[in-house]
Image 1 (cartoon, rainbow, N blue to C red):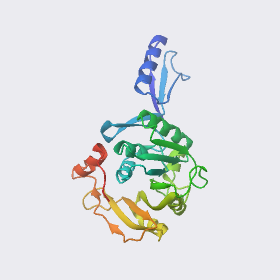
Image 2: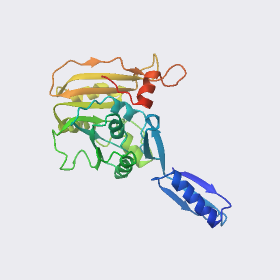
Image 3: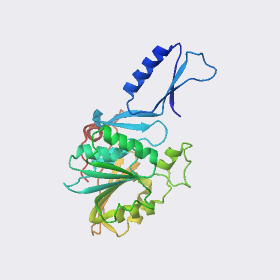
Image 4: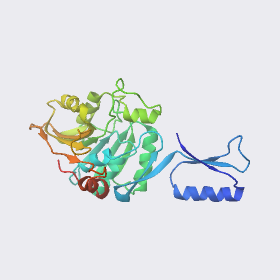
Length: 290
């Protein structure tokens, strides 16, 4: 579903002014202008299929589809948990419209990130977002399938891999009727294969970071197995006394070390507003120390 605006009683001169007005305020966003049968000769429809959204207190702008995958707070928390050293290479698997990659690049001016996304439409938007935020020299977006990745993505070549995969198993949820949204939220690649690819791309002792649904934590840990160590689990509590719906999982490849449960963060206070701790991450780009 797209946003449609009906402008009635507009002559051709005013029509041109309206088009200029919308295009100036929706730069880089698809704007379709057309006439509908059955309406007056001076009626025009203005159709927006994408939105321009502010993140991190307005310091980042993302073009996103009105329908389909839309970045929320999860990519921000994922990016906030990454602490790259100068010169390190980071891979963002399932990068969507580029949210996590761009959030990380803005917070860490030395970070160099490659995003891998299977949906071509999202890759196009992510490239526009990288350019809009002036990060072309440090963020690269690639269209590719992790089951048959581009040959220039070499195994064992990244210092860190971060990922925000689809949350739902295809046989356990009602898929969205919107194809792009369904593919972003529902697995087309099993979680085990997704994690296997992420670990394959990591250098020995590299850092793997994932955000996912809390109810799939045991499955994630089972897929990680003995290939990683120093595992840290960081719950995102929606409110005091409420069960966590999301968790951050971070681990290091080919390292031995015990699992550690972090206290995590409470997202909302009694008034349902974000807590000061959550606000610091979501608006002021504060890092999370796992």
